[in-house]
Length: 52
Length: 66
Length: 220
Image (tube, rainbow over all chains, first blue to last red; front, side, top):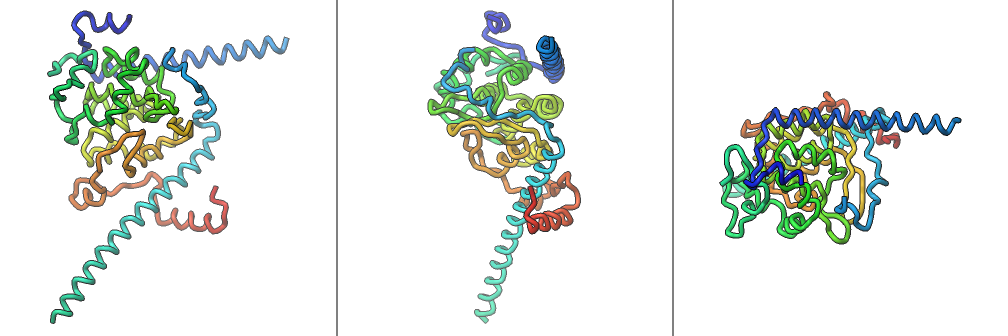
C-alpha cells in the first residue's frame, strides 16, 4: 500500500511545508487540465464517429 | 472505490458546474450579498434601538426619583 | 507529543482514551472534541477515512480533496454516513496546519479547487479566534461558485458565499455545533476590526435600487 510505504515502519509521516502544498496544488491542477483536454478530445472523436 | 458503493448515487443530479451563465450567476450573487448587508444592518439598528431604549428608561427613572 | 517534523500516521494518539494532551486550537478549543462524538466514531469506522486519511500530510490533503470531495456536509443518508468532506476535516484537526498553509488552501489552491476552499473555510471557523475568522472568511463572501451539499434530506445546491455566511452566522453547519463568535460590531468597537466593505461598493445606492426592483416585482 502506498501509505505504508510513505510512513515506513515509524508510523509517522513527514510534515509538509507551504512550498510542498503549493507544488501539490500545481501538479493536481495540471492533472485536472490534462483530464479535461482528453475528455474533450474523446468527445470530439465520438462525434466524428457518429457523423460517419 | 467501495466507500462510494452505498445505496444512492443521486448526488450527480445536482450540477455544480460554474459559469454556465456568468451574468445570471453574478446577478444572483449580487442579490444574496445585498440581502446579507440589509440583514446585518437591521441587526445593528435593532441593537442601537435597544440601547437607546435602555438609556431612555434610565433617564425616566432618574427624573421620577427627583 | 507530536514532533516538529512529523505527524503520527493515525489518530490513536490524537484520540487517546486518557484524553488529548496536545496543543489547543488558536481559539482555545480542544481539536479532538470539535466534531461531535457520534460523528467522530462514524468517521474512524468509515472505509474512506481508513483508506484515504491514514499517514497523510498537509500536501496529501489537497490530493484527497481534489480526488474525492465532490460535496460538503457532515453525515448523509439515513445511515448517517460521514462525508469525505467531514473525514478530511477530522484529519486536518489532527494535522493542525499553520495559517500560512491555510492561506494556501484558501487562496492559491482555493481559486483552483472550490471544495479545497470550502474545507479550509470550515476548518478556520472551527479553530481560529473570532477576529481571524472574520478576516480570513469574509473575503470569500464574493466567491459565487456553486457547491453541492449532502445531508440526511438528500442533495442540494449552495454557493461558497452562502457557506461563508452560514459559518459566520449559524450555530450548526455540516452537522457540527460551532463555537460562538464574538459579534463583529463588538470587535469593531474594540478597534480589532475595520468595518467590512462589500465588493459592491456604494451600498446606499444599491439598497435603493433593490427596493425599486422589489416594487416592480422583477428582482429575479
